[in-house]
Image (cartoon, rainbow, N blue to C red; front, side):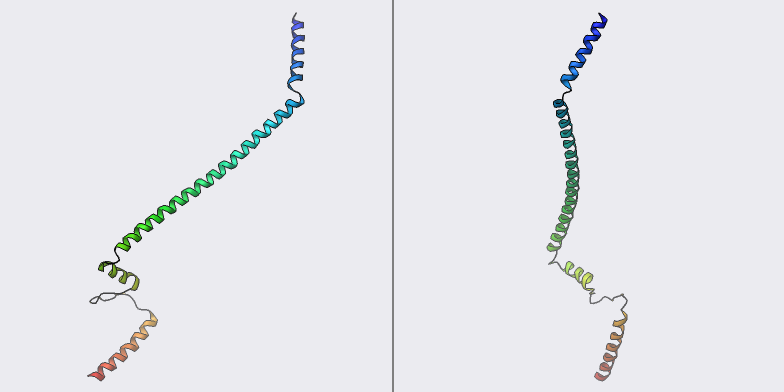
Amino acid sequence: MKKKKKKNSRQFNRKFKKRFFTRKSAVVLFCAVIILLGFGLGYQRIEKKAQKYEKTIQELNTEIKNIKQTNRTLKEEKNNLDTDEFKERIARERLGMIGKDEISLQEEEEGSTSDDESENGKEGTTEKNSK
């Protein structure tokens, strides 16, 4: 009886293998593997694009914050344009001007010192002539 069971199980295994592992099933299995690989590669490409887009979004958000800060600064500057303190500050910073009773402690450039000496010489002669 044991031999019959082994014989029957062998026959069953052979029949099962013949039915299950046909050419059609091999082709279907191969196609399924190819499709799964295609989905996997597609998913990786999509992930890379998503990471790239996230990075771009972060950069743009940073740029937006910087532009908003610049806008706030410009609005404050616009509101302060008419004040005397603002006009004085701009004249000092951008134009290098000083007040009437103030003395400038900046060093003069070489080219401007020779011009100043010639002007001082002219002024001295005009002052002598006027006396």
